[in-house]
Image (cartoon, rainbow, N blue to C red; front, side):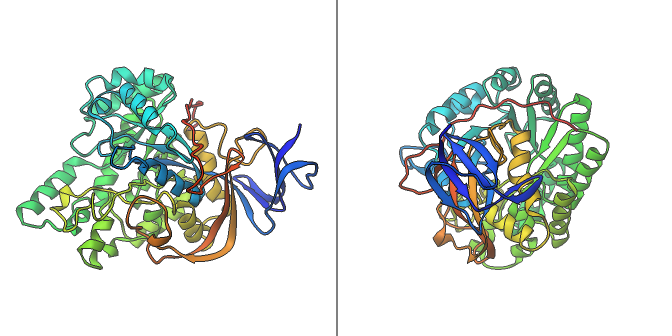
Length: 461
């Protein structure tokens, strides 16, 4: 069989180890991984001095669908993903992402709309993790058909006006488990948060900082424990999104030690930034940190790194929300409950995680590959991706661990107008990114991303 591309001289990093090896690619797949590979190839890429990583899989993004006013917004954010080393993204279609009223009302209509409006508008491979909203009358009835249509993961919120009430959330867990799906849950307890918000507003405490003060760690921990107990009763797997604090991590660790199939992700901002930022800078700076859950203490940051090392946290994902200070965040700021929650991170995830993790000795390169690519592929039904292995898609990142740079909004490609990591000195940079064997990430390239239909394999505890 002829070889289309030969990547030579690099160090291949997998979740199981690292070794100097060449990678032969035929068509869109990895044909061979080994030392001293030779033979005619259409092109040879010299990776001497570089690491060869599997393309990152970002399982938590909130891409904006194309509109007449901004037809290329999805495309530009997926270009940004590729520029940062991410070759597959899963996106939610919750309110605020541009989904129509019809799509927001039905899981199946939402899937059809997402596929139609993102077709030809993605620079990387793309999939949907649908949002199960409390406003959808037939959501639970539609779950089996949604899973059969290639969307086996979906998210429910325990907060916001579109949250799923507890009894329906537990029912969704049970239906997902019986039909080969997995529910992802945003864990914050409204019975703790809502009275704090009401009290702050009564007292005229409306500035950005009170978003953080009204969403304490115990609200996240209480909801995490509640969701874990629901999953236990439903005999269902559970995936907890954007875990941010030590107290919630302890609940996950206890569940894992009992053998319960509970999985959890955290995000680069929770591994890097702290709540001290809410006391620094003017309103235009503080509003950039209005995210849910909010940033936590340095103690929580340290606990999350330990959780990644010890295996209690399974995935790092970006929770990319391409908000703009000048549009969605609205400066001057309205009262804090009206501020859009979220911030960008699709382009900076690998760089920040590598620099703050591997370069600082908090995490090994192999473990980082595991939580950014291999485990996301396993948990989310992406069997062709996630590793530099024979037969997998040739999604590769040629990574220079010796590079040094400073993150600046002016250098990024996402559709937000800021980065929460402005001025962060980082180590490491992508030199070249391949999607299914071909270069990707250049803005002028025709988008090659495909919609990925997924099927979950049985998930172990």
